[in-house]
Image (cartoon, rainbow, N blue to C red):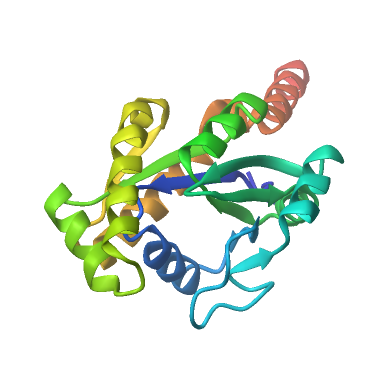
Length: 211
């Protein structure tokens, strides 16, 4: 099963669950992964750069991308648009990269509908108290916004069963390894290897004929 094509991986989780840090650690350790860069209408946070963390675009530009079918998925979250540009993802997968989309549950369910082979993973905190503490210690948001994120988490929790796997992100290194093994295992699902199976059957038929 050499020269395998990359697969599409969707990672979601409550804001504050640590999914961003988890994914950065994963792609730093394992070179076959590529983080997709999403487009968003929200303002950059301190230290973020356009084209690195996100493509920061105006609302009008984002809506134009929707109308032209240039996004794999899109959603609204806490008053802003987020979406995944299609061309970049498909190019990376064709080069053998496993492409990871860090997106919210609305977008994840769009991906599941439109790309049934996508692998969906939900990142959980060890507890809801820990989740709130992480949001507070982040220090970048008001208490009103933190409460808004907690309300959003309550709604997101209703859709967790739609995902294929859960990762409880308590200890970073362990969570990185768990996620890596989940993705590697997904490569060996029979439905992803139909062409290889077909070749093996053809070779077996030729071998039997030659006896």
